[in-house]
Image 1: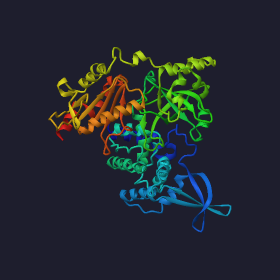
Image 2: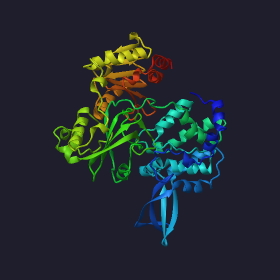
Image 3: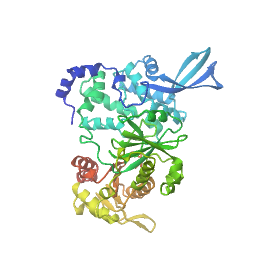
Image 4: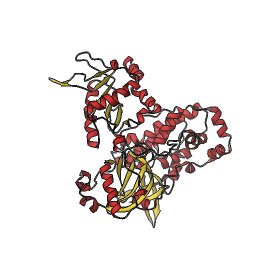
Length: 525
């Protein structure tokens, strides 16, 4: 899909379009956004006297209207071009802003941003308050700043940009806090290019992003959610962050976002655990979309969930005493760091058994994945994955059997030979072996640990062969890692099940990065 001027003009001149263009940006925000107050931010207030912070003079965290504060500050700055606008944004991120407030005869100072002294918390403050920050900048300088209202919805922005030909800049890695904080500038630059190319006003760009484009994208699941393929465990309420109160108020219509796993697929089952002091299983949800990375989400990787079913709580003591669940490493570790980990079908059935004993009606819960259907029939080992799953996929991507090299002998060290399973775009010249893409096969990759081990192995081959693409194939699915400016990252991959790879649209999207035409093109560079 490309931007269609005729369709846009019809929309712009319609009653709905006129209303959307005039709409305040606060009304463009997603309804599932949990913030009670639009564009709010919690800032630390410290007592000051004679320009010095008073020791132990902390006032605590107060919620402020960041949009208003940023608008007042940035309105005083004359901005004549995009470069000056970007310099202002970087100044806020690196140097920070401060505001003084008087209360009961005392002066308190609030500081926002300012991470250039190595304070990663200051960068995270910008990251998590990106909506309020950009809303205030947009109010003051609408010609140069688009309000970023996709917090916790970066996947929605990606879909819009892909559909309408807007470039999506490379997303920074999870640990690169400053890069994540200023990533908005790269997005804003592309949005401003799009706006100018199609002669849109700032208000029209807002209407396009938050009303027109979403309405013109094809529905994600027109036939309803697919059957679950996996079961995931997530945690809420860590550090008293307000999740408990939120979870207690959800109903069957609630849609929200949570820290999760990139391998999450639409329809998957999600078990919601409440952390200490509650320490019990609270509810069962369904994943509504694929897992995705969001640079402006504190925990980075997230999932969108809905259709919650509140259950009779299952306490941690019941997990630990259960003959099966009590033996699981995550349970023995009291679920520390377990958010986003997978539960087996056997584990899920054990949970259902505990609920049945409590008198809970199990018909309210989704049925577990059909293991026989999920794991392709007849595959019992790694070679079966290669012959029955990977090689048919490569043929569908335009390759012939002569286009890949299996078990290429590669010297990795003194006297050491290694054998990548598959190399595409291969030059087998002795001592100068290279390839465009390597694929490492396993029978199954079930856990984060197994994924990391397979990733490290595949990455070593990819670096040795100077490959730009590395993929992992297992009975559970197909992982694709593309080399970035900072190399391959386990935080960035595309995951597809074999069932998904049979869909023409998904197969086409994969072919753009590692199909035969794409690999041949890279070989000529």
